[in-house]
Length: 141
Image (cartoon, rainbow, N blue to C red; front, side):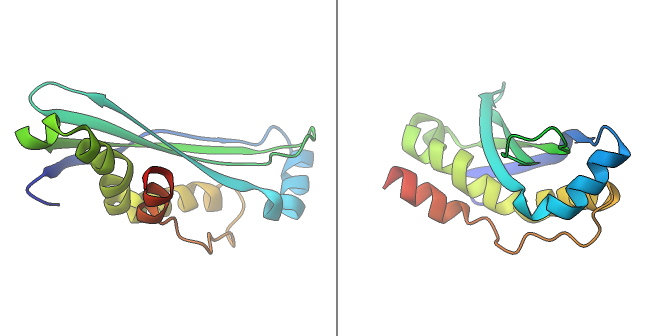
């Protein structure tokens, strides 16, 4: 948190775990190492110099097979931004795509892993941590 922005609230906006039947569950147990973590970040302007940043994590199998489970969480963050930041498109972009996700990610990852663990995969971990600063600099620098 800086003078440029302040996080006012963060919460789980939506969460989903879908495993249609026991055959799929057993298949996924044996093949969950093929699943990939995908991240999407969207934002929208709110009143009174506030923004809503939605960070979505999806953990899914990209392979074309019939037996799949699906896991998704949307984590919403409400932040206020200073006047000078609102006028600077590049700074606003960095706050939305890098700064806020970096701050909220530990809580988001914990909630998402709890969802997956409670869905029958208690040993699953994400070995690689998401580096939003690196992703941002690769895309925009």
